[in-house]
Image (cartoon, rainbow, N blue to C red; front, side):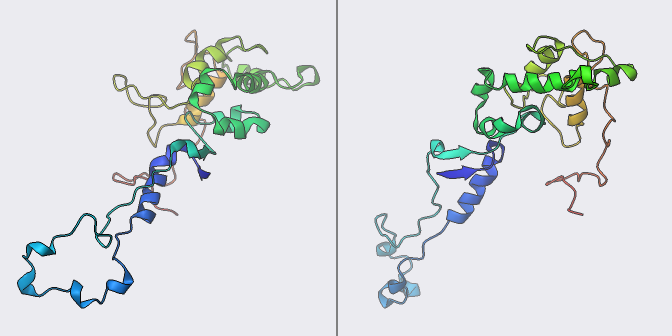
Length: 233
């Protein structure tokens, strides 16, 4: 079985495979010095010099890896940022990374997501002082979204449309910008935190409420042309 690190990086992996397996053949070494294979300038237009398709010494061009997709094991995946990293319990991360978006739709990992979001809002033991983030948000005049242990509430209602399934959606008829696609400069974590923490369902807040909570820009600007990322520094 062969491993790939992510279906998001499959095109890069395929390019690497193709690069490694693109081996134009030079024919058998024993024939490389055979006088019979050489030709005078006068014979370059001779019909007998055309390459026989059945000739094993003819260049083969690119050799494509035709391994069936099912023979690979997925070891990582990422659609929406922070889902696999922050919302899946440690014991289930490998299973989540190996799963498919169809498994997300089947609610295979909803229990993990609800548990983590609930802990973020309410803490592990409110009676012992671990009250989660809701009291901190209220102290900042921010209204937290609602969630209970069963997964009911506005947090899950809003978040489910983005992470079930855990894919990055692109709607060409709508304005570009995360979560509709993802540009390099989009403040994806600030928007994700707003979805997880704030009351968006009734319009109390919107997804831009926390923009600026994290560094607003890179220390080095993106480039205007490919590969767009700044040089390593």
